[in-house]
Image (cartoon, rainbow, N blue to C red; front, side):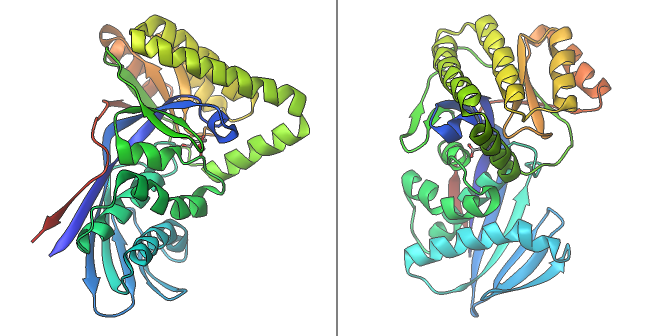
Length: 326
Ligand code: MEV
């Protein structure tokens, strides 16, 4: 018997980075999943196999890679942390065989590590007969996210656990929001890998150097997100698109956009997007374009011609789920 859990990826519609400084962000779960299966073993080894090109075993603090060399440690360590945090909570001492099958591109701003941590915690709980509450899953997956991102706001675990569209505010948790209209989005993946932790650190350095300039931008981003929440609730996609463009400008101002992202944003708007912005930590990774159905093909083609991979994705209302397979 094994336990399986799946958790969705995410895109941030407004407020990334500024959320680290206490402002609200809007984030949506999308139909792209990380799946984790868990089974016990009768030694103390945690073995992790994955479709990400990495696998290996942890025995105490020692890591032995099977695939991916020593680089595998960086990718698999957060899964080990998530599984051992869950074991500790359950007061279980057991080795584990963990198998990861993830559709979420790594280091692309779509919350791959958050979804993996959340699914790991839920699967370990399920295997030992416990359905952790959502709040517990978010808390237990935090340690793993800290390993990956340094000082994350917690937004990625929150959305992968809850699904749907939520407003996230650090230390205040989540508020699900109902949006009347579908939000027709195209994701443009630059294929440029980057580290969320490094980008969050770079913003902090900029803020420390120029507090009087950066702090008002953070406040402005907070007002923008508050307006964007109202706009989404009312279904005014044209106005929401305009706010996305301003949001991208604010992210550029704090230094987290790059040439490729700026280019994708411009070509998407030229091709008829109502608005576009980078999503997630920036510095590469992905952008999103608000794409009316009639313009969808043209926008996807424009992103492709600019060198990106367009991904058409939809909102999913369900967050993490777990089940037993005999
Ligand atoms: C990463 O998905 C979003 C950031 O705001 C970092 C965080 O909130 O932890 C860039």
